[in-house]
Every structure is written in C-alpha cells, then in structure tokens.
Length: 433
Image (cartoon, rainbow, N blue to C red; front, side):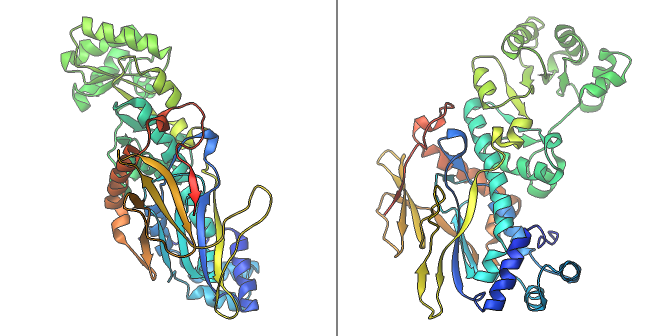
C-alpha cells in the first residue's frame, strides 16, 4: 500500500480550497490541464513519464487523523475545510497521454475533470511527478537514440534524492534503458537490476589480483571487473589472468574514453578475449555517448546526467484551469492573458497527424466541441481514472512495461530529424483548430 501522499503539496492548494468553500464555489465542475509551454533546452520532443506512479499516489491521497490534526494545529485551514478534507478521495475523471507517449509544447498531457476542490488540491502532486519523471525520460530517450542499440544502465541513485532515485530509474527504463542499479526500483517496478563492485572493493584487498579473484569466486568469471583503479592495462591483464577467456566484461570509469576503449579492445583481443565486452561509466551524457559511437564500446552506465534530466531537472509543466461551470451551471472557458504566460481556454482533444509513411507531421489540438479525427490521425487521450476508479493497467510493473513498449512505438513515428542532438525547434508543430 502506497503511503499517504496528501501533504506532498503546497500550502496554497489548501488555502484556495478553504476560501472556495467559504465562497460556495468549491463544488463548481472544472477542467484542469497539465502541459508544458515549451520543451527544455531547444529539444525536439519530450517523453511523458510518471503517470503510473502518479495514479497510485492519487489513490493514496487521503487526510487521516494525523494530517488533519497537524493542519488544525498550524491553522492552515478552518473547520469547514478540515471536515471536507476528512472525507476526501478523488471521485473525478482523469484522461491523458499514455505514459511513454511523445509530447510537444502545449500538448494537454493530463486533463482532470472534477469539482474545483477535488482537482485543485492535486496540482502540486501532479506537477512534481510529471515534471521530474518526464524530464528524466526525455533526457534518457536522447541517450538511447545516441547509443544506437547498445545497452544502457541507469546508475544515478547517489546523485539525487532517495525517492527521486527510484522515480528516475523507472523513467529511464520506460525511455529505453535496460537496467538500473537501484534495488527499490527493481522491487517496486520490476526493472532489471545490475551491479558488481566499486573501487572500494579493489582497495580493500591486498592486491588488485586478489580483489578480482574474490569477485570471480563469488560471481563467476562472467562478471564485470573494474579495471581502472590503478593502471588500466595492468588491470586488464590481471582480469584476464584471473577470469580467463570467460571474462564477461571490463568496466572503464575514467580516462580519455575514445582512445582508452580502442586500446583496451585491442589488448583484450590480443589476449584471446574476443568475447569480453567493454562497458563505460565515466560521467556520460547523450553527447559523450554519441561521441563514442565509433568506439568499440559494448554498453554504457549513466548516472548524474540521467537523474538530472541532462541539465533540465524539471520539464516546465504547469497545471491550469481551462473551463468551469458558472453560477447558472453553464460551461465557461477561461484562460490566462499575462505576458509570455497566456494559456488557451476550453476543453481540448489532441490528435497526432500521421502521414502515409507512418510518420508524425503535426500535433493537432481541437478546442471546444468534440471533432471527428481524420482517418490518419492518432487520438492521444486515454481514460486513466473513471469516476474515481483508477485503470490499474497503467499502474505497477505491468504499467511500466506497457509504457516502455508505447514509448518505442511513439518514437518510431517521429521524423529522423527528431534525433539530432543539436538544439532545434520541436520536430513537429502544435496546431490549434
């Protein structure tokens, strides 16, 4: 059971609730929308991630005695609001882009239909999950493209918060990474885990050879030996001496990687270890991975860059009210008009325009009345929560696997220029109709 998530929020969500109850507007039906005004750092597409774990957190969004007592002691809200919160569970409907879907500026990736009170207090939770997870997945997807089919492992747990580490591993896996070093991510989300030894293990022993022997004795000759604690070429020689031609891999965590990888490959081949692989883990990002494309690297381990979104730790998503019923019960579209932060009001139906070659050409957003899509359009919104009931197919390890598969399908629709690492405009336009 997921722990209560109700206080993972900003104070003003509850003070808005409190004031709306007093004004008698808290029960107005509303449409909220989560979207990003732009993609970070001139990137050409983004990847939606975090949806499955967000749904589990929404299920757990409750105010028990401990939370209500604390809110009362702190004077955050008044008695009427406390009474309302005591009975809170989300009873509305949420639709959104599938987890793993490609998104673009202004894509309405999550749409919440509920009363004002039920929807507004989810804002912080929704944005904290989608902003971080989508940022990690978007960066990880670029790394997967740069790796051109070579496996990647996520190993950044020591470079972010302990909860973020689990979320990052999940997002990176959805984006195409093959494994994580984080055991909780493996337990919670079914992600394959990996890891053998760090430099401390080598330094513990009386010699590098003794350390290698201890690791091989414990894990077998197919293990990966870290060979750059002292001298790389001496380390490779000792690794082969201990494990023989069954040595699974050597890991390089420092040095001028392009030239070092080439030299190590030649050394392994000269020793008869043609099947021993080389994995590198030295402060990699999508650019260094791309720079190694011509080197005989077999796999990559990525840490800091992936868990920080490769320089963009948040995806820039916002959560806005776009429509509500008025005092007469009539629907009213609403939008911000402030400079550089203007929004488009009204309920939206987004579709992906697909050409005869199966490639995306536009993100077309129908505003207002429902419109029949063209035959070549792919509809993007699916129901995630129906009248308070979460679609469990999007949650848990099974939901992660579905998101991973969907990301691969969605990426395959993008034009080739989507995968250029240089800064550029979104690869397809967002069109309102």
